[in-house]
Picture 1 (cartoon, helix red, strand yellow):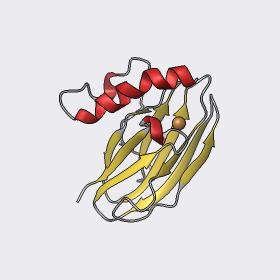
Picture 2: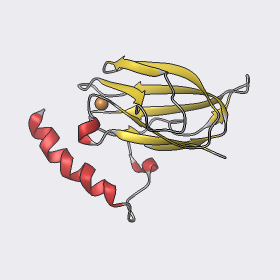
Picture 3: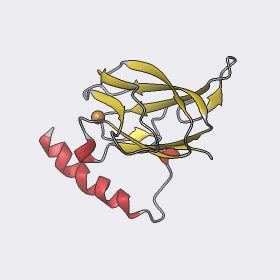
Length: 140
Ligand SMILES: [Cu+2]
């Protein structure tokens, strides 16, 4: 596990360049429906993120409108346990909802309201040092 982390770290750092890196939809193992924001019959925006046996959220960026968001994280990993939390003191407004533990093969759903437009960083607190972070954008 340590060796894998050391191999993956340069990749994560290289991804910070912001040049012409491939988009979040490039991962070949992504399940259908992952990463697309849809509106449920009850009017709530729904989005599903996936994690794997790496340190990446797929996608690592999505955009919603102000209102209620129902977010599901699927951990498709066979080895790694992840979690999901909005990075404290980082977004335009605090979002308390989080997923504290997601074992391999598990999924969990949280629901929360957003009002203030802007970027809301999120992370897996276990692997934030390895670059497992992302951003939710709320439209103005
Ligand atoms: Cu993680």
